[in-house]
Amino acid sequence: MILYEKKEKESRKEYAYRILKENIMSLELKPGELLSEVELSEKLNISRTPIREVLMRLKNEHLIEVKPQSGTYVSLIDLDLIEEAIFMRFALEEKVLKEACNYFPEDKIIELEKNLFAQNIIASMDGGEHEFHKLDTSFHETLFLGVKKKAIWESILKISTHYNRMRLLSQKKDSKELVVKQHEEILNIIKNKEKDKVENVINYHMRDSRKSWEYLTKLDEENSKYFKRNEEK
Image 1 (cartoon, rainbow, N blue to C red):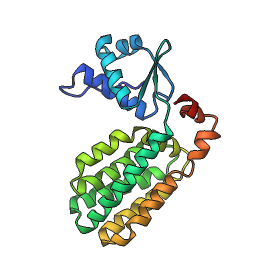
Image 2 (image 1 turned 30 degrees about the horizontal axis):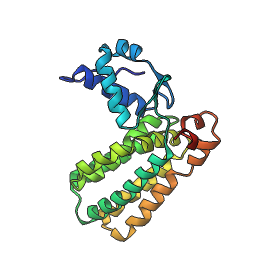
Image 3 (image 1 turned 135 degrees about the horizontal axis):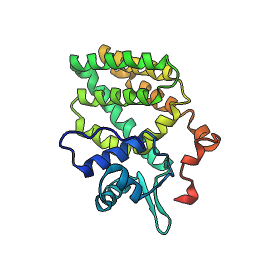
């Protein structure tokens, strides 16, 4: 587990929550991994009572699973929760892009261009999945912020915890260059106000991101154990 620097005025409980969630979302703590309250308390320098409160908070976000007489585990990736996130993202991102075609602030255009520049650099390198994933997420966040839909983006993040872990796994296998190309197309659609192209580009973007998922969930020896099976639900 990576222990990031504590932020100014951040309480120990908030720090523990942030560290655990970031390690789960980055797959530093693997799906299915057993968590020890005693070890977490020692590593994070916080008593066990607030640790339990943090774990319950993460349980409510579907990131922690408590099994009676067994222990506390990082939740396996649930494909049903991923489908819900995709449904929500498709519906909302289509509307956001269409609104962006009507008006999108110049400073946000510049942010997207800088983001794409960084994406291109990472895409040309071996590895870099974590950095690329952060840039990918930031790109979509900027789209929502550009049309003043910050609260909606925050709601999407809450429902997308399993989706984003899947995306990070798949980006180790998938073509980063293809993702960059699709992001460039999204930016051009906004610049040229081509509202009629929005539905197609969102369809392709969502569809292509799912191409390697079946392999990951069923055939990949390293990663297939990270997914929740029907009999476990």
